Image (tube, rainbow, N blue to C red; front, side):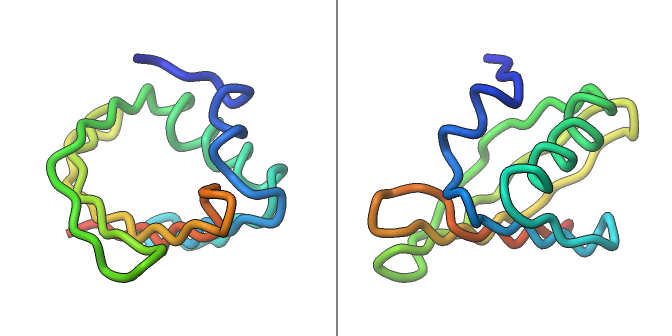
Length: 96
């Protein structure tokens, strides 16, 4: 399934944060997250495959994913925190 940013925004709180050390940047709010998705997913034609998920708290989970795209292949972990509405409030991404 391919999503464009307009479809992805529905999953994030307006003040959500993505912190991704592999890019050297933090992305704040819908505008920042839009830049992240456009640059690192659309721009690199990234395909993400779900590998596993572990619940780490009442509103937290660690998701392990397989990334492929123009950059090659990487395995990553996404530490996701959701707000009371179930929207992503924070996503900490890291490559293995």
